[in-house]
Image (cartoon, helix red, strand yellow):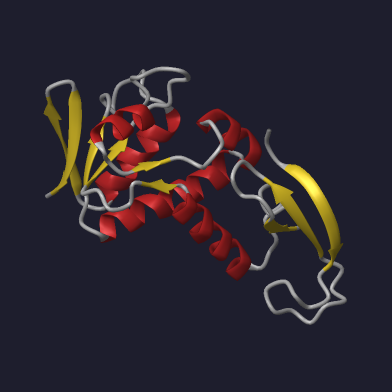
Length: 177
């Protein structure tokens, strides 16, 4: 699976409203369930200078990656391949909101997007959930040395936004001070 080219053409002014003749190429890719998803200059890897295009894609992917958006609790934690202990499996079992790009494992998505771009999308997801007043539960201690790279960054982002960590059984709840 993964990012597979489906065709290309010059923009002709159709991409993000620029005038055409700019030399940009428009690529259509099949990425999991994103059949026909349009990516300009392979935005997943290259991210053009046009910050509005980047912001648009970050917002779009954060929205696409938001699963069970109407739940009041967000489950965060480490991705564990093929395990019921993985954060997204815990969230599914609890009916909670979680971050997962359709048709992609976490590792595959990071490989496609890179750590920095994945964090931009993940942070946008967190910001959206915070703005809705949701509570956050980590499947493990996000401050432990065994916590994953992104789990630690998620906790740090919540902490920077006024959240504190409270142990709760085997989970850790992040609540606003």
